[in-house]
Amino acid sequence: MANLVFGVLLKLLQHMNTDAGEHRSLAEGELFPNQGLGMVTPLGRGVETTWRCLIGGDCGIRGLTPDDLKMNSFDDEKNSYTFDQLSSKVAAFVPHGTNPGEFDEGLWLNSKAIAKFIRYALCAADEALRDADWLRTKEEEKERTGVTIGGGIGSISDIVEAAQMICEKRLRRLSLFFIPKILVNMASGHVSMKYGFQGPNHAAVTACATGAQTL
Image 1 (tube, rainbow, N blue to C red):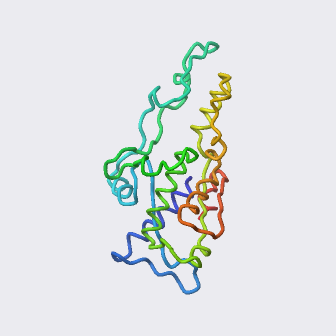
Image 2: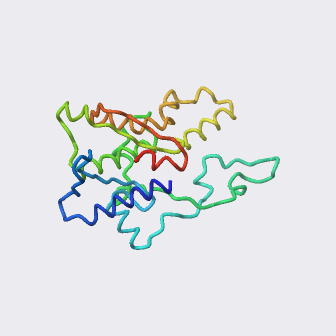
Image 3: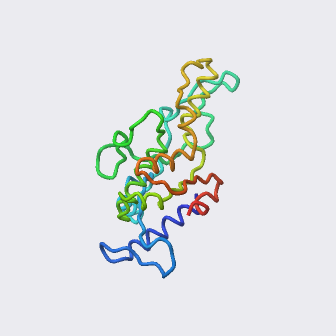
């Protein structure tokens, strides 16, 4: 995560230092003359919102409540609820809603097979592609455009929900879309399918090295 944040901030600073409406020109021989940025973070949706909140000292972390947990059952052995057993009760959530700077989930909910982390990836990728002016229409350009998106563990909320169903012996309630929802590579897959990109498709899942390896 630290590597990913560093890489994003480095590109963001380079982006902010360019003249309005222009992208930084790279040295001759480098492959990517255009840089596009897209963000969906606990500070908000979009580069402008995230940057403004970041330099303004805003915090994207808040305290957890029992309603945030899908598995807040009572543990007879420990005589306490799951929430009370948590060693940490803070987390960072992406702000959802229809207001400016919030993530409007309805705009990206095109299929039951698309988990929340995939919708975040689609939203960030769309902003980055528009920022880089790389919404290609020619087949040759699509064939030369690849997608690489790294991640941690996919849709942990869907994994937790499936585990709860198994423990409660409600196996018939398991969705047929469970596996496509939790695979990290589905984020880059859905981005490439949405824009018709036919180049290399890659998904790094290498713990703290994920950000650096993806970049």
